[in-house]
Amino acid sequence: QKKYGKDKFVYIDITSVENGTGVISFLNEIQGDKAPSRARRMVKNGDVLLSTVRPNLKAFCYLEDIPDKVLASTGFAVLSATKKVDPLFVYFFLFTEYLQKQMFDRMGKGAYPSINQKDVQELRFLLPPLKVQQEIVNCLRKEQKAVEATKDLIAVFEQKIKDKVSDVWGDKSGN
Image (cartoon, rainbow, N blue to C red; front, side, top):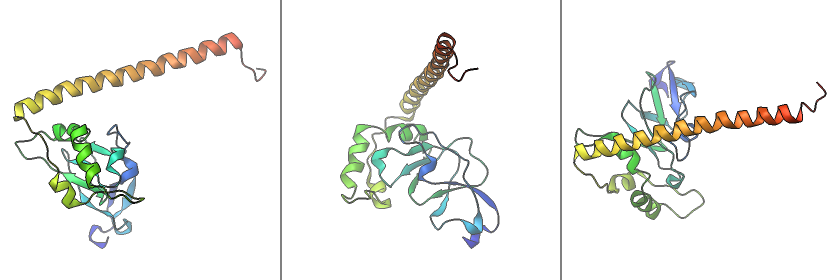
């Protein structure tokens, strides 16, 4: 990609987005002139990435707090919201049965199921008024935070259990 020169970019490919969670890694840095041919989508905060490759795996993410220079793979459709749509509402809506069925119905039946840009443009979203979208997003974000806190708590207690088992059974290595 000569047009990007020697500048460094964060490259988001399909493996950068965790399936089903929206967790994204910004660790994949590339030099512009050595970027793969699929590194062509410029993205910004507030964009939503929808994996068009195996969309049933739900590699979708909402971009916030992204680094300065980010390129996404052409394996993503970049959804940029208008002022009438909350981009987080769009992101959450991608996971609904309603939209999943639309994507599934458009996927090819081969070994590499995908949808294309035209398929993405034909997806139908159910959009309540902006205020209602924002209320739904606020509720879902609160639930997400509760889930994350619960996962952290589980990790703490799992470690405590391991430590207690180790105390009870002792270190089998002879130390």
